[in-house]
Image (cartoon, rainbow over all chains, first blue to last red; front, side, top):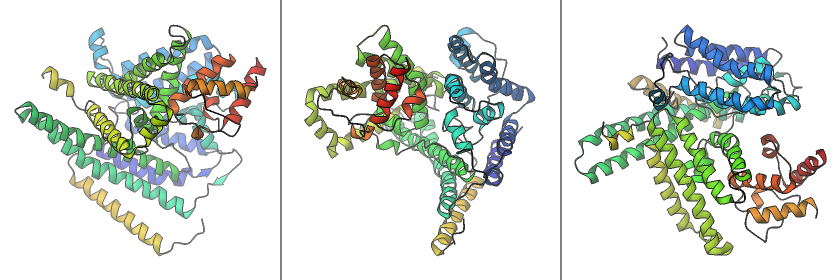
Length: 404
Length: 40
Length: 79
């Protein structure tokens, strides 16, 4: 049984050692990387059964596409099958209780939800990748799915980007050059990431927990509401420092190994509305759900039931997309609420923007959008809303309203 | 990489070392370690 | 009507702005309100207008209108 602190130490050692093994382009590089990835998965498995289940779950899309990759008609069923297995492995509480399913696998697979994204990307892009002559071999596939840098919590890479980056132009061999600035910047980024996660976010987490646990001690609605706001404040900054810190660690560490990982954050709490927020927070997730949930659903709505009703199709698609994204975040009703509120925020922001443009006309609307007072107020309101919706992620907020 | 390390770089490295020491201290002091697993 | 002119009409429709003028060098930064959301709306509208289909990879790597027009013309010819 590997405990959390040992895992962290193991990971820290890994990212120090890995660049010495990986910053060298050769025919062996992908095998070395695979060995490291398998090592991490094995270390993260608490039992042989978990390891076996993980291997099956990871290999399934590869095998499906290898044998039936040319059958376009089967694709939706493959995706549906993968998602069903995911829901079962992730143990969605309300699904299990609704359908009275037996809980055979009592473990949680590390990186499960991020596996899902990569597997779906692989399946959806398979045909184009093949036509463009991309390598679809087993080793490349496994390295993509198991990439230990992005295993735990992303950022979400696409197969194309991963392969392009791993092989470069394909002609370079030998040591991947690094400038002094790049070296210092990457190491600095990793260290800053650690500070963000283990110092800043750890403190914020304990403060947030303290105020949440103390909620029941407050008599009177106003006092409780005030305490809730303090909790929400610490929680939202905890989320930012914890998640962006983790991204700093993996982006910097992967950079040292000669691998490029996409940015995931861009000053998210400076957003003027919820739509912009999702372009600044967990950016790779937004792009993924835009490409694989929003776009297909939106296209379908426009082509069949809602032809020409663009705004309505947009709003429904956005709401459904964020509801699904919210549910992906976690397996309890709290996360469903999270999704609902995100969807609501997005729809309201979209409608407001459209109506406002119509009312004010182009000139006045532009002045309005560039007005510094408007911008400041918008940022505060958006941040406040996001703050409140974030309380549903990680805390049983629903139980506050429904009674314990 | 054949650029040389000047005094600015040395200072940067010292500062990084200090931050790393703070992290190590915090980890050994804290009874709770928090890693975001996004629910997993 | 040339592809550029037809595309310009689609832009004017999607962004609800009759004053939009595009050229081969126009990029997303030049058009106000072109974010990842309106990008999808735009792609769907272009697919509709020219009766063609794009893949995700194709539309994510476009750098400017010139690239876009090349892609559209290729698709039309490929049919």
